[in-house]
Image 1 (cartoon, protein in one colour):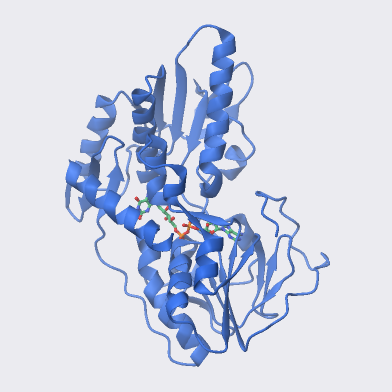
Image 2: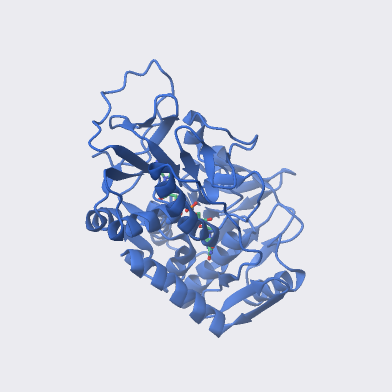
Length: 403
Ligand SMILES: Cc1cc2nc3c(=O)[nH]c(=O)nc-3n(C[C@H](O)[C@H](O)[C@H](O)COP(=O)(O)OP(=O)(O)OC[C@H]3O[C@@H](n4cnc5c(N)ncnc54)[C@H](O)[C@@H]3O)c2cc1C
């Protein structure tokens, strides 16, 4: 099975001769595209309650799926790599689900086919899409040695370690021990967690380094309550992290050292940049013949469906509701799973679909890397050890259920 990533993206065109499609073996072929969090739960539930005369297939670009909320903790050294990854081969085997490790690059409702990067097309009767999102500014971060993008998350730790090893080798051969300059681009929840967890690791290992957080807007953590933002901002300062707001990083130059350049043309020297800005739809969605918004995300109705005939659902980061809006998060993806499970079964059995009701308020917890977490729920917020304990327990339990 093809498993190298990222494979070159083939042109999405009818002129590419595809090998014959995989044969059907079941009356109902259900295909889950992407190993997102909702799909992992569907695989698990299928193991307990499979549908008669139906086969479930999971298409995933990797044979492992990463659980994003634990990634900053990996950076801080609170978890090791295996703690936040789910072995899809093992999960699928245990649950009686066929796993296809390849990148989905096309979906044609007319032909009822999912096209893959290397392997033959897969026919489907019912499909669901849970491909996640990618950080914005792909043109800038892709292929840059200095920039370690958080996606694909399945190989983030390897890419980061490669870059760190290069940096330390350079420093060792250089003789002197100048301070390493680490940058985190993006002052949203992910960027703030990454900056604090990175600083914690550097601090514990006593590496001579400084961390700077760059944010395009006037404040970090836009969308969070003002008191919460202030508490986190104070903590960043206390931990020695420099926060640069109104710095829209637009270029990365590799001449005479490495520089991040903002929209005013000002340059900032850096040795390594973690890239965590915004969320954009994965480029492959262009090859999915389904309704989309101008921003490229899939349009879904109340039943999480983006096509009625054949039934195609979309959940998690990749989907945007016509009548509801929820922030893109792991929690939202997980919450959509029970409804997706009910509606996948209803679609196969010809029953009526149910409607999604997003939760009004969600508890949000940011890992601060030092055994505490910042939490926010509606108008209330704070920093505490208890919040970290709660987050740690919830995250570990989620992954362990799937491991
Ligand atoms: C650093 C960081 C920390 C975060 N912390 C939190 C947190 O504490 N709480 C929270 O709720 N949210 C958190 N989030 C947000 C959260 O990660 C995402 O919103 C969530 O993971 C989206 O889940 P998903 O189910 O849509 O897809 P994902 O979990 O992103 O999974 C998508 C899957 O699809 C696969 N895939 C992609 N393209 C293809 C393709 N073409 N073919 C086949 N497979 C493909 C990927 O390999 C991946 O396995 C964090 C995000 C980051 C970056």
